Length: 252
Image (cartoon, rainbow, N blue to C red):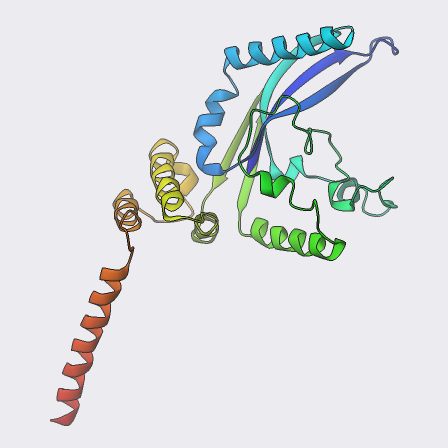
């Protein structure tokens, strides 16, 4: 998954020549099937203007002086979004302050647990999973997430002001993301998105040989009321026929 972030660069009024950045999550836990859409959205001047206006109104309401000199919208992937102090300072980390779990002692504050200015969370259960859990259950969930993430290969290219993210699908991570779709309707939507993404960004699928025709076949099958029932019946029938032929030949 990845996340769309609104960033404001502010003058630090307590430090001559100093400045600091504040980050706010606009869209959280976005599946990579939506990547093309959000690569365009991060460049949308209207969305940036809307965010600037909303934040200025918030400051005005709270009586906060506006010191922003630059704002932008960018994409941040899971590895950066959920990076922790424990990961960055492995040899010297002594644990978080207060009751924050180590896994949520984030190195960068992107509003990972905030709904301020949030437009949409594609997977709120992923965000708020630990509300009533024991520490053992939380640990088990992070272990499961680590296994899921290991099935993905994502890398980045940083080109001055343009932040370009490119993902590489292989058989394993394509199947892993498909398995996350719980209903047949979600599966069909995912396959349709993947088909379009392969058409728009073919380099993202260089780790797999799946074709547009194969996507069409899968979409057709998963759109049925009872997917794979007829195909499995035909396979069993063909296997039975082959077994019968083999038996006849072996008895001759």
